[in-house]
Length: 138
Image (tube, rainbow, N blue to C red; front, top):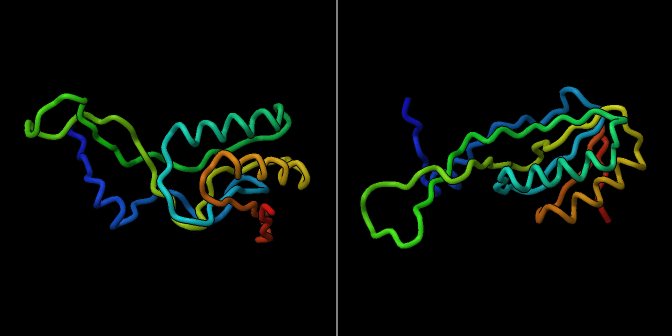
């Protein structure tokens, strides 16, 4: 089966995304406040940070799915000869898409995690409760 390779211009123009905007299985959710591209390294870095803070006391759900393949040719290759192999998979996140969901967590610890996550990601993040109340980083 052949995988269709997308061009970068189509990603930015159409904004392909796979995340939902409501909390499904947790109490708190960390969401984005701007559109941006997310790769696996960024998401894994945030996941490790959250797991260190939770210490097996709470349950963590990771929401984004990486459905967009990005191709890249090696350095020193001449023009032509088709597209290069798939180098990475990314996800285009729109505004108010949820990155992580957390279950069995108190609000002060959730806010502490939000502050640390905001340093890791270059775009602003917010914490949202299941009831719809939002918390922002100062």
